[in-house]
Image (tube, rainbow, N blue to C red; front, top):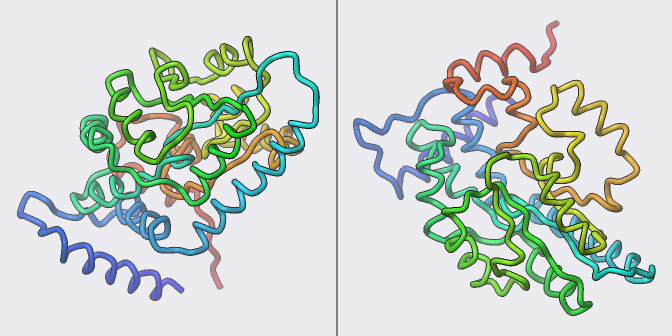
Length: 269
């Protein structure tokens, strides 16, 4: 298996290099964190299984929405959704950075989002259009910054997402926690579904928690997954990774590698 993964990654690197010439100042760093993100982006872009998981999530979301519509509500109904890796697929950004031997940084991320070039996840647009046909509003709560508003709206609007306007796009102002923004929506609407790719998209139980706390709070919330909480797959990044680094965003790729090697489990004969 290890040889197969290595060969697959080499093939991917060769294919990507055909479209991107690596200069002397653009060396691919041989680290788990960089090569790993290239491989997971490969999965997002090429695996039918990834699309199947997205379809599955949105099929379940439609079933739960139909159930919620059978219940009375004094307030207008709403869905709260994240954007990145829940609605829009940013794997080209991960590939771009990996081929430069780099991980995420805010400057390059803003360059990417300014292009309004992200594609959608499978099943996404049709689900939100269906919800809109049932008079259910969508609020897009994202940790994209205020400067990204226009480009984000443009990206959503080009695929016909309903409620892609400034009133329904709720960006990060100062803090990354989405709890206050969720409560703001809940004050005027009945939230029937929450969709996201990281657990902090659903509850403050998962805001800046340790690895053990995240696992325990997931167990405590087990009855909500597939019902109120709909989780989209994201193998490329998220709090599942940064929690391992104790949310230290200044670690180098080599330092992240050391952390990962210290926690992954193998076996010996």
